[in-house]
Length: 423
Image (cartoon, rainbow, N blue to C red; front, side):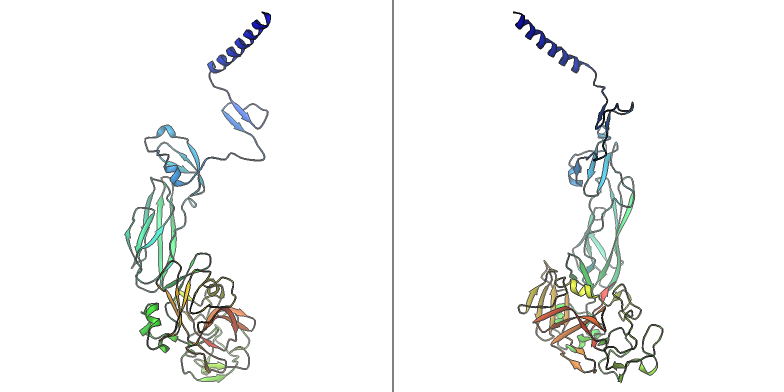
């Protein structure tokens, strides 16, 4: 009997304790991570020297799926971490507020920075900021926005003037801050690079005849007068002073007197300079063309420059190693498909990944060797880079449809083609 009574009393005590707990107003203050009372103004205090508080991580779409509206005032104070903009956000009565400075809530503009003349259906976008954000886009003068104004993504038609076109900009107000993102764009002949970027080349060799400058790459490959496409044969580090033309006077160097930017002076101007050394001048000057920006004697027009050796490497396999093509068609690591064109103008047609339209043609223009003699015209191509390599300089070269060498060293007295890239 006494045992039964003890059990009943125990159960009754437990019941009373539970009822008492739930009957009390829940005003308790809590400290987690330390044996101390919280401050009077704190409901919850977290104490740690080894970690922090990790908030719910949502992207913008997941956040917007919460379906908060300006009427959702009861949600004020709701906090998340937005993984699209890498910021803590909280709901402030009628909108999401990002706890970031004004310089960082807007993503970079996504889209091609190099496009062909008159290209249509080009898409430029930023990551959505919030449902309440406003977007104001601008494009270069002869470009046009065909759809998407006042949204985070626009569709654009490019202009027809080749060269650096200017900038695409978007100004976004997220309800707290206003920020502008900018993408510099060029009109030319863009190809893919290893890593997924783009490189915009001039659509013709420097010095090519005017008749070929408006042709598409396909039209260039089918042009009946290949010599019009070859352009000038430049000695490394020289400006376009006439030495690059098809039949200049030839003199023996190296020359030792120069102007302020290291170029020929007096009766040596415009002459093709042959030499028993690897250079047309003495002493050598590695800074006439530059692998870091545009050099003082770079012959490319404003907005363009001689490509670096890294840029030639980037449009092939990314490693600079010469390779043999398995025939007249080869797809590089960069994603560009290289197709050999055998007639009437021999050279490589290059088509970016996921496209069926070639965007660049490199004719087999040959070179002028250190004795001023033409070599391998219509069979090989030699295109200067801005990089020096010991006594010589690096160039991009190819032989028929059999091999491509992204970076190889030749003497600076050689006359080679230049295919400018947009700055």
